Each structure stands twice: as structure tokens, then as C-alpha cells.
Length: 154
Image (cartoon, rainbow, N blue to C red; front, side, top):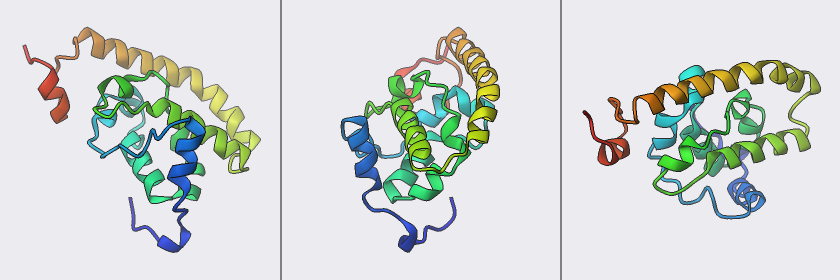
């Protein structure tokens, strides 16, 4: 992430997103990276990073995040939720960001049509990645510290 121009941020953005989700779902995030480490979409789209997107929300980077194509790559598998030490369900955050982007006019119809075509392929790739991780039994050589604490390397 590049430098943040404080004049172009919305300090209430994190509160708005949290309220739309129905709880203070974003505030307890301390950006440990567990969500990014387990995310199957990350395996497919290198730039997709739930931790960075949450950090951008907290910083108030509303325009940057609602115009980003990255909010559309979450495959809603909830892997992040199961591993998150704070219990944050990024899939809910991503879905709300998508709704906000549409409602506030940041997304054009053409883009939504393109995403419909891509979405089935993305879902399939995410499923295959998840099956691979499940097949490993989540005991693979994981790099995230929280995974190392809760999994055994055989």
C-alpha cells in the first residue's frame, strides 16, 4: 500500500461498514494475517489480501476500496472466519463492500457482467484450493504463526 493522503480519507468509514454488517466486526482486527494465509482466493489472485483490505477500511480509504476490483474476488468460503483469532468473517465484509460499491455508483454495469462470467471460474478455483488444503489436513507447512500454534506438522 502506498502512502495515505489523510485529506482524502473518511474517518467514519470503518464505523459505517461495521454498522451495515450489524456489529463491530472490523474494529477488533489487529492485522495478524491469518485470513490472508488461509484464503483460497489469494492462491488464485496474488493481490487479494483480506488483511490489507480491512486495514484500508480502518484507515478510511473509502474511494480506493470501493473502486478496487479486489473486493469482488472473495469466494465466500469463510476459511478466514474459522482461523481468525478475533472471529472476523471477511466474507460478510466483502459482501457489504460490494453492495456499497454498487449502491454508491462506484461500479458500472459492464463490470458486473464481466464478473458474472469470471465468478464461476473463480468459485471453482477456490473450491479446488480448499479441497487441496483439506486434503493436507491443514497440517501442511503453514507459515502463519497462529497456524503453527494450532496445527501439528507430521
